[in-house]
Length: 72
Image (tube, rainbow, N blue to C red):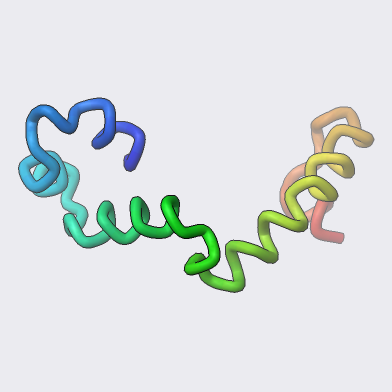
């Protein structure tokens, strides 16, 4: 959604958020975290660190494993 809002900013952030039924503060918080990654939550950092491992396991199993098998 953030990419969509960025692509259509000319229409205004608040009207777009109103139509998408998200709070404008959600957009602004995401943009602030994008500018200062150190403010992102610990969960985001952990997920980022694990994403390479998850991708590797998924590819090693012919890209057919679902979330449950990858987790195990």
